[in-house]
Length: 203
Image (cartoon, rainbow, N blue to C red; front, side, top):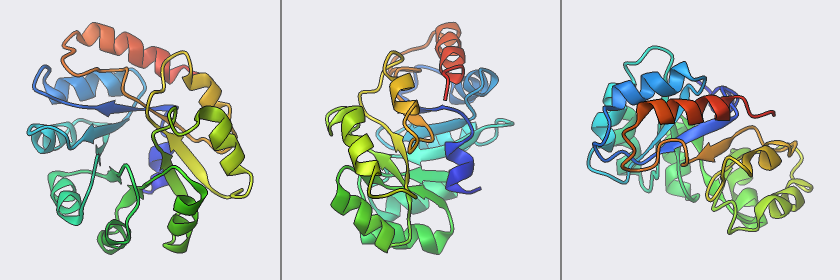
């Protein structure tokens, strides 16, 4: 599994903060069935690692861990079954650990310096975060000019209404969406409807 496999699986990667409101395996089945196979489970709740374990067993699901802040988090997520890892920022320690573990890794960047540091470490696929407050589509379009080979997954503040504008950028392979299954949401029919709409966004 490469990071490109993850980023090109669907136009939107659901960013999930799971608090026990919904069965994680059933949620994964709902999202995969709606056309969104890549799922980012953020390590922000005590239930996250168990959710990754459960969701990793769902056929067709590409389950990853988000909010990976250190090597310990990274190892725990991989051992739980995460196939890709996402961080809000970029550190040498995390980058080196990802290389050692041979796992698909998407570090976060917000500036040209961040991107250059990532390139120096051997990465050219990044999470642009926080997408809206870091300058929005215009900022990413400007950053993309000097980094023609770099591709991004903007995340942070993106909505169903703004996703298409982000996906229209040549440097954007996918976007991260927290609107698909907000914390506390237990209505699987509503989640499925949002997921189907997200999967159909033109790219």
